Length: 153
Image 1 (cartoon, rainbow, N blue to C red):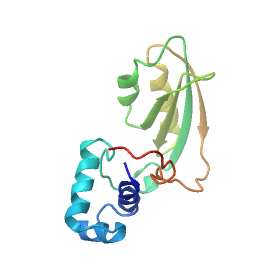
Image 2 (image 1 turned 60 degrees about the vertical axis):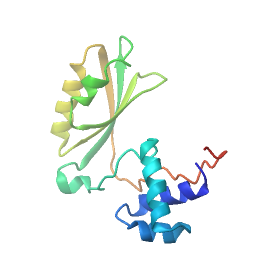
Image 3 (image 1 turned 90 degrees about the vertical axis):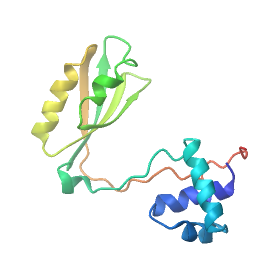
Image 4 (image 1 turned 180 degrees about the vertical axis):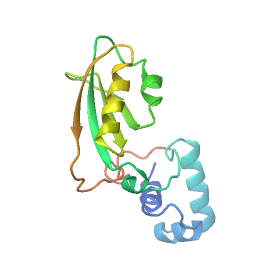
């Protein structure tokens, strides 16, 4: 991945609806060359998907919590169990005092409590510790230009 690929990624993160002509102009390529590079980035899995950024509160996700999940056994094989709970947006196996960290969005704290009950029902879960977010200062996507390392083919 070279600096042009990284610049294309940064442009797409700002506005994924840009035309290939606009993308190319922003990074010094023709529309065709920009299209080909984006296609290759998709094929290599660098671009995993194109999505719409929806305001969570507008669709009933105003309560955000991060939940540390304790366990009595290795939780690395329980991804499907966590994924089966639609309120869980992310789940990560972690090192430290807990086994899994999940990001949960619900409309109310009562619904959050229900999600915690359902997490407890997952085999091996022995406890949870939830931290409710009061305010989000900002969220940002990964900046593809931050870790410019050796160029890949």
